[in-house]
Image (cartoon, rainbow, N blue to C red; front, top):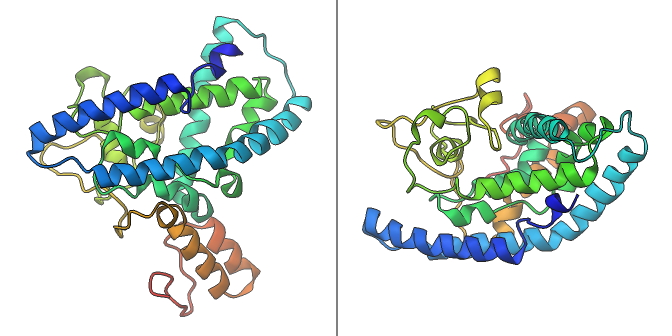
Length: 290
C-alpha cells in the first residue's frame, strides 16, 4: 500500500510543487490580466487549508481507522493486491463513488455545509484548491466510499487513491490554462473545473467528476465552457470575507438557524437532507438575515 501513502496533499514534496506552481501562476496572471495577483485570497485559502490539515487528523482516525477498519473487518470480498486489474477496477469504482459524493455535496444541505467553503473564492486560482472543509465526518461524505471497502478494496487503497485524485485536481483551479481539445469531456480539465466553480445558471451544479468526466456524461451533468458566456465564480450569494473560520462555517451557521426555525421532525429532517435552497411552506426567519 506504500504507493497510496507516500505522496499526499500534505507531503513536503507536494507542498513544494504547489508553492512553485502558485508563484508561476502569479506571474502568468499579471501578464494575462494586467492586474495584481489576489494574494489576500490566496492567504485566506492557505488558512482554510491549514485548518483542513489539522482537523484532518481526527477525520482520518475516525473515517479511515474506525469506520474503514470496521467495514474492512466485515467485508464481503477480498480482492487481490498488486494486480493491475484490481487497481483499474478501484480507479473506475472510486471515480463513480466520487461523482455521487460530489453531486450529493451540492444537493444535500448537510453535506453542502462542509463542501461550500471550497466554492467561496470569487476568483479561481490554484490556491483555491486548498479551500477544503474541516468537517467531512459531520457531513457523512465518507459513507459514499465505504461500499468500496466492503467490496474488498483496502481502506488505505481507497482513501489513498482519493488523496491522489485531490492532488490531480490541484492544477484544475486556474483560469490560465485554455481548453485542451479532444480530452475535454473525457478528463477533468481546468476548463471543465472552471465550469464547476461558476455560479451562472448555465454552469451551476455541473462537472462533478474527480479525474474523469465520463460519469457526468452518463448522468447528464456535463457542461463545456462556452467562450461567449463568461464565468462568474463564487457562491450564488457571494461571500467576501477573508476570515478562514467564517469561510468554513458560514453555511453551517445558516443550516443551524434553519434547523432551529423549522417545526416538526419531518421538516427538521428536510432542513438537513433536502437541497440547500429548501424552505418550509410556512414563514420562517431567513438565515441570511437572522
